[in-house]
Length: 168
Image 1 (tube, one colour):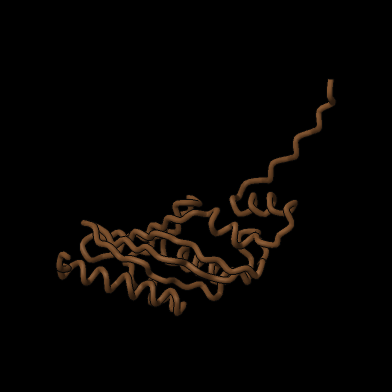
Image 2: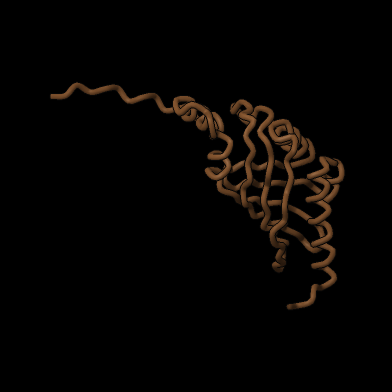
């Protein structure tokens, strides 16, 4: 196993502190890990840029999942980043982009790329499978309600039902 460089050790400490501060919901400390906070959520195409926007993202997600937390699986280093594979867990207790709270818990495997310029964190880019999370959150929701709820999450209007065509 290759020994860590001093730069890798500093980056890793910052990322581990970032994760711990998120779980404690010490968002001032989390925001302090960036010179300019910037999140990219790849599955949804969302970008949260700047202190106010990222703070609102934290507020919205913790309203939906007040017990949100992480379990780190593996941490890897690349030339310009620290890559973290982790489980994200939480219980849906508040609204999430039009999805009313279901009370269901989720556990979703994710990857986050913490992109650095030197030892400065410039971006957290998160990849995850939305369907994995939705399948867990929507357990027990009546089938007829799933389409409109998912459309709301995707910020798209629900597709209108196709009209019945008369048989010729």
